[in-house]
Length: 146
Image 1 (tube, helix red, strand yellow):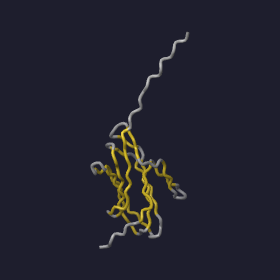
Image 2 (image 1 turned 30 degrees about the vertical axis):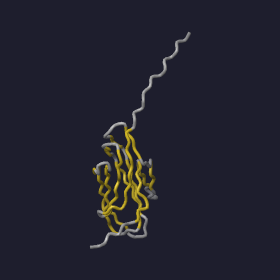
Image 3 (image 1 turned 180 degrees about the vertical axis):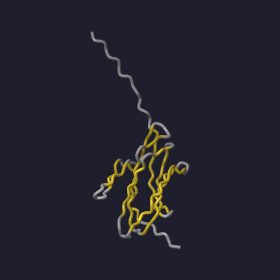
């Protein structure tokens, strides 16, 4: 059995969308966040992006990303990425993933867990809060003209 060597995770971020330039392969992270809010639950978050960057790893590896509702350790969703090959342990590899639609069941704390070959290598949490709906106020009555 080969011992698991944990890679160095340089970044693990949550945002609204990850855009990758087709020529340079540079990633743009749009709408980084640490919390979401909604007036009603469950709610559908239309776009969510994840970005992770790692080094000190080589070979072909299986990556999984779990989203867990920490209030009760409920698995909300899981993404399994196809085998990723990294040729050189000194290489810095970065990855952007877009989740097209995600149902958030309740307010509370959530955590993305990044696993490589079944081993937890990074975690990123965020809060989901219940927003109070905006109060609708009546405009003041107009005064009658003399």
